[in-house]
Image (cartoon, rainbow, N blue to C red):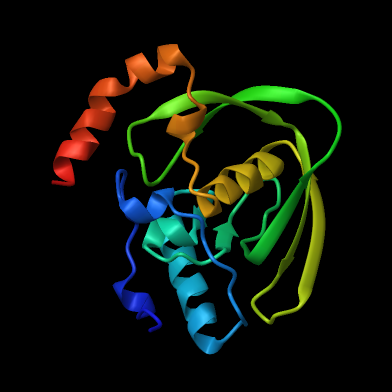
Length: 171
């Protein structure tokens, strides 16, 4: 059963779907397009730069981005990411599903992506810097990985109270 796009909202940690590996989208349909457009609305309302299917309760391999470097909102259906050789960099990351938590995460600085767009056409792109970081963060969501899984022990201690509050709010 396809969800109604208007009913979608951003789920917060510890929602179970955030920990599940998302499934491929069999084909780009009008329903998939409506969901992607709603995801863009939600991302923009929260002033985010990316949002993945699991974050709105869908186990779909789909994410949307709005990177300042890219200067265009994009939709990636069934993305595959290849990390490119080069430097790694630590940078602060936050997550719309884990409000109040911002941690330094080390990631490669360059990546290539292969996906489908909202018309079902193949898309191939390469990016460096912030856009590559966004892709990696969103692909983590599609694999059930959260920034809290990439935290240092010190960050885990520093954010323990906020995470416990999110867990309590979910009960």
